[in-house]
Amino acid sequence: MARRGFQQGTLFQRGTRRKLWVARWWEDVIQVDGTLGRSRRSEVIGTVAEFPTRRKAMQVLSQKLRAINRGDARPQSVRTFGDFVKNDWMPVILPTLKFATQKHYRYMLDVHLIPAFGKSPLRDLTRGDLQGFLSRKLNSGLSWETVHHFKCGLSKILGAAEEWGCVTENVALKTKLPRRQYGTTRIVLTPVQVQLLAYELREPVRSFTLLLVLTGLRVGELLALRWGNVDLKARLLRVVETVYDGHFDKPKTKRGMRTIPIGAETAEILAALSPATVDARSLIFAKSDQTPLA
Image (cartoon, rainbow, N blue to C red; front, side, top):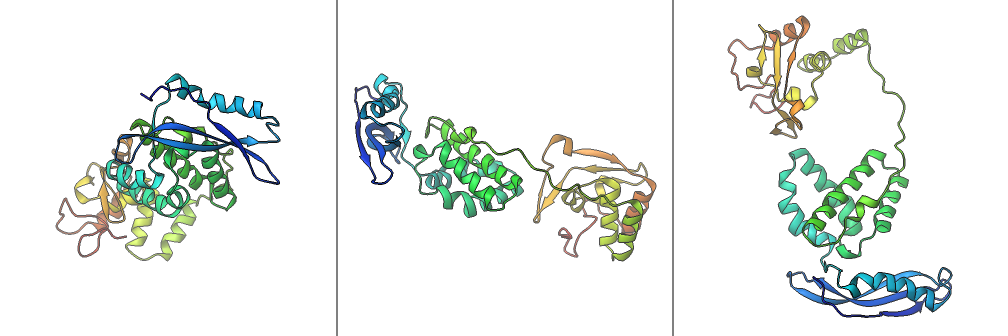
């Protein structure tokens, strides 16, 4: 619990052309070593145009201090976003994610989130800070999907910070993205076009392409398919693995673990690929050292 003690805070103006009201007050904080400390906080509460009198500005400051003066304010950590991510979130949360997701988060953090927020104290991050970041990324030409991933990443990190008592709320939940704009309709090849494409390809790419079309498997699922999970007599194949960047893992969801009936053409392609002596653990599409083909 925060220490009780009434305070009014201080208020002063800053700036010449665009004058601002700046407030200062003391608040309890959690130091980097986890101990409770005291810190003086400064915050711009508005422009002089918005609050033309000191009395109106003081009313805003009083609202900010209400929780502190009531003793309801929870101390927040003085740690920076970058320090929290590096020393807490990555060691604890990142290993629980799938390999492909881990790789995506590392890229997102290194290239976008840490450069933007790494030096910012967690407690100072606001909805406006995050909203401005997301808007700038959209305006820079990044896709809606990419920026949505940034929003989800920020929410996951700040959600952990809230759960572990570093901040009092996850401000990323208050950010918004514009309605998603869908691009042009995807072109779907006709069966004849698929056959013409396959005719131009060499093995094993030809068989791989046709199996993707005929089975509906994802690339990673087909690359991870082993002979032990194919039953040519019963005309069934089981999806139990996927591979990404050489790393094998289970499918992302329970529905991803599935058994698929196959038709005559699919069975014919697989039979042509089948070696004389079948090793159940062998990949169907593999290099000479039994690593995935791609």
